[in-house]
Amino acid sequence: MAKKQKLIPMPKVTTDENPLAVRIIAFFVAPIIRMFFKVEVTGMEKLPKSGAFILTPNHATNMDGLAVAYFIYKILKRGPHFFAKEALFNIPLVGKALLAGGQIPVFRKGGQRNDDSFKIANSYLQAGHIICIYPEGTLTREPNLWPMRGKTGAIRLALNSGVPVYPIAHWGSEQIMGRYSSKFRPGFWKKVQILVGDEIDLAKYRKENLSAQELLEATELVMRSITALVEQLRGEKAPGTLWDPVAMGQTVTGNFEKAAKKAATQ
Image (cartoon, rainbow, N blue to C red; front, side, top):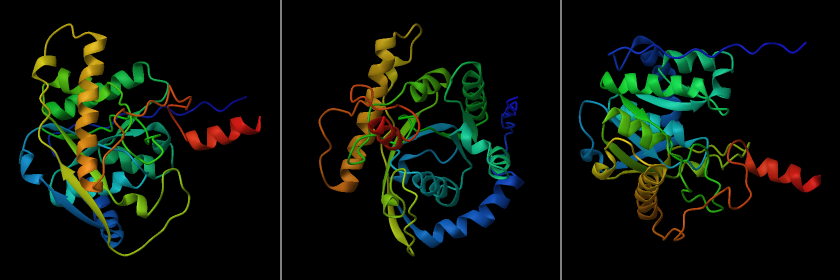
């Protein structure tokens, strides 16, 4: 008989951006991040010094979340709240630490549980916190790590909450660990650049009865804003069309490289 999977709880929302659990986690994790990353930030003055807003970074490797979290906590001096895949919350100790730190589980199968996740995120925003959400929803499938087409979650959260959205881009964490790679390439003070963009103008979309097409348009606006920032960091132009994993026959969740290899052997 299959073992019943334990239900992942939601984090508890408080007005405190820097609770004891976050301070304890940061005490141990921040020095390790600082050992490997030299995080350099440009454009931080564009962000509000207090109050709620949403950050939308590109997602190139599993390491970039650490760099972004370091930026929010150690440089912005704010408490980060990320949407993170449910599998992380099933890892002993890691899952408890994520929940204690106010991170929000997101579920691949969607449904009511993801509705709960967005309600918690909205509650954090109403309490004046920062939410960090990767609009791509997973690691980019673009061959050269450019941002790909996004999902509508970030826009729906922004429009429902009424808070501003700021695109951010990073580049450099792929030097330490590649996309879906198990090879850790440590090195002291490898530079990770973070570039903050201007608030995205969503005025035309802040209305009732937004159509599905308008949601997609607003999402593309976010992804184009992020891509322009990545271009600045990399010093090169991205492809003119955002990569569409569905059109390219790729899986939209999980390790698409492993899935492609498995399919090729069948």
